[in-house]
Length: 67
Image (cartoon, rainbow, N blue to C red; front, side, top):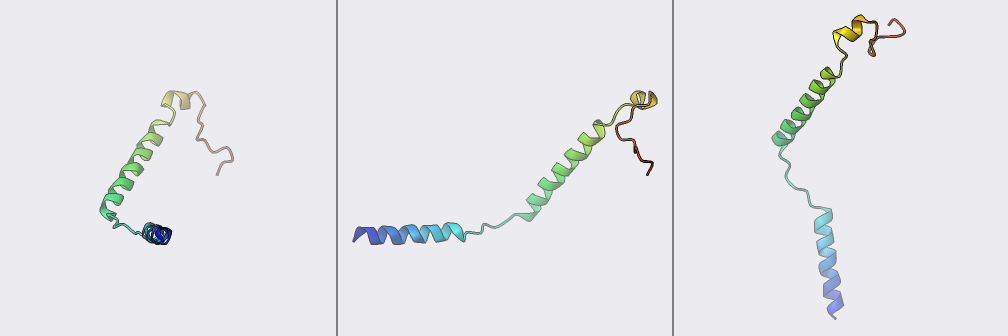
């Protein structure tokens, strides 16, 4: 008889976990996404070659096909 109760309890817990939807703090998510976008922009700017390298004719961002 004990197994029936145990299985019912496990099934109930599994359903609670499966269908659990926590409240989402959208403003916190928006701040976090804005922070990560800002990090990407600043890191991509620092990756550009210096003007010395470009003046020597090396520019990795140069459009090779003239578009």
